Length: 225
Image 1: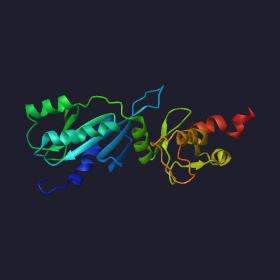
Image 2: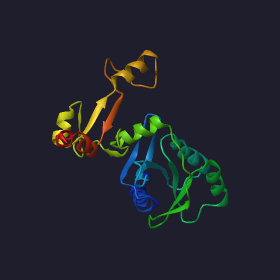
Image 3: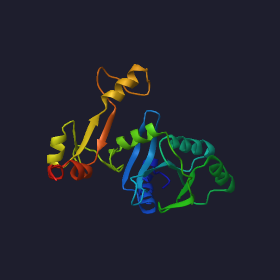
Image 4: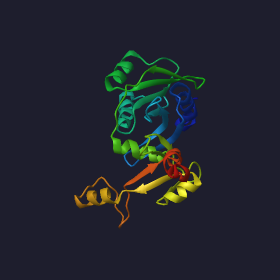
């Protein structure tokens, strides 16, 4: 792995996320305007009664010489994610000072071994990220939160897609549905809310309903009953 780029190690981290956290969605080198995350995984954690998911963010390094700096970079991901890890390439173990630094900052540690296998050395605590940034990142990963059941579903146009504004079409085609909340958007604009996007008269305050809820609550057969 001497001449490997950090990006060459991403598949090993993805494999670890899938096997150890049962992630169903992944992305590499992604994020929002504030920073980019090397590897991201999303896992269902809500059990039978909740659609809760966790975002796990991993900063990947090739044996960094500035451990505290790399740890701080990973820690910054807690504004987006629920669990944070620093994955580092090394033949030997993390030394006691490095483990103390990671524990003090509150990040998990992953050792990437010679065979590219990942081994968790220190678990990440759970963080509650900034909801706005958390949801924006999930949407960037093509996951939208259903306003009825609370589950996150794929909103990509060419996969488990959705229609916009046309509820009848969503019912007929058994697709998800996206709508815009014009009243809330207008209220935010009136008070000068700088946290919303602006471009002419476009409305960005959007919400989603998943295909299953469309089928369960809005299908013509259900309405007739």
